[in-house]
Image 1 (cartoon, rainbow, N blue to C red):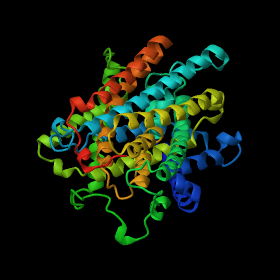
Image 2 (image 1 turned 60 degrees about the horizontal axis):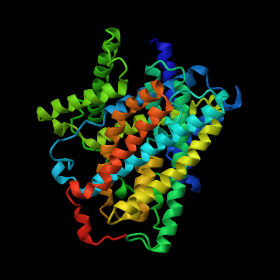
Image 3 (image 1 turned 60 degrees about the vertical axis):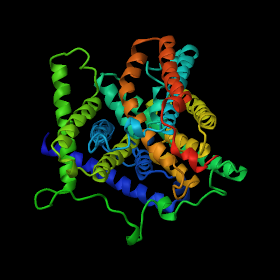
Image 4 (image 1 turned 120 degrees about the vertical axis):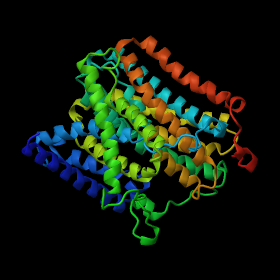
Amino acid sequence: MSSAQLTQLMYCFTVLSALLLLGAYLRGVVPLFRKLFLPASVIGGFIGLLAGPIIWGGGGIPFPKEWISTWGALPGILIVPVVASVPLGMRFGDSGLSAGRTSANIIKMFGVLMVVASAQIVVGNCVRELFTTFKPELGLYAPFGFELSQGFAGGHGTAGVIGSFYKGLDLPYWEIAQGVTTTTATFGLVGGMIMGIVAINIAARLGKTAILKKPGDIPLDMGKGFQLSPDKQKSLGLETTYNSSIESISFHLAVILTGCGIAYIIMNAAKIYKIPGLMQIPIWAYAILVMFAVNFVIQKARLGCLIDNKTKSRIAGVCSDYAIAAAIASMPVRAIMQYITPIMAMVVIGYIVTFSLTMFLCWKFFDNCRFERGMAILGTCTGVFLTGLMLLKICDPDYELPVLNDYSVGFSFTSVINFVLLPITVNMMLNYGFALNLAYQSALILVPLILVVFANQIFKPSAIKERGWQN
């Protein structure tokens, strides 16, 4: 890469940084953004999109085409260290994930999350088949519809995963699919918060909540997105190295990027030598596998104390912020608009299915904190983990209920399983017809549903039943 290209890359990040700052400012001053908990990356990304030449056909702020192309490619690249960071720092045997400490409610939370996410895949598949049959002129590509679950249950960051995966398969519509995923993620995030807040208000007044008698107030600083009180500001993480040798953040970033580099070497070798099966594995899958191995070596060498989970998470968060802003600012709106009718159809149906299925399953199979569990799952299956956390905090401001632990561990299981299933699901949609895909996707619903139904008989009962939380 030449000096001029590196300079252009710096320009790209400079503009994205300005958009993130503007998004953070608007989150703090616009009441609607605060109430919906819209991330600065989403707000800033849309400002870049609305102000740039994509919307105005060459008008607006004259961002060069090279910048927009770079922004479009960034999510697929930045998502690699985000995914790779997941296994880093895991300590096996003391994480609370061992079988002996796995409660029935954790398994139920995992199962319901999987059922709802899989149901969203079915919705997208059925919408694609419906429009392919009655509106063939739209020319929907084979895996169209998968973006509903990836946007709703995966969030904006997953758009980079989809774009990277499709691009690695040399699919010409990778950028459109990335944009469609970003679109469904935006609808999911906003719609999920609105549905959740309305449901909480109704449930509180009807006495269907475990401890909340009236909708709780989220602290103003949390809504604004920044903390001005020094005594309440939290640390970014532990300094596990001396800066006279290497900055702790530099150390963590170096470990993550080294793992990513090894993953790229393995992936390229598989392609050069045309190794069957391995050529189709996406880079982020290689990255997460490599980082499991790297973390295993670190733990075996008794160097696990050098890895701080908060620092690691902050690095992943930085990559996610820039990836999301870049994905939205470069959305191919004109290409996406030709699919706007099927997109809106699956979004509306997705809202209905997600809300009704979540609340039914939680009310049917949980013995306690049913509504609070439903809100956490609803937020996750329409936005991200943080969305579910926000809805849960409204219901349970001080986290007195045991839902947070069950939700966090169940979500961890779900994240790993979804990464494993993604390439399998896409392969099915690319190579097989509607009937076989529907059968496969129905199995994705049935298996975790069976787990939910028999969780009390198979797994250790949760201790929270003894504490008297009934709703």
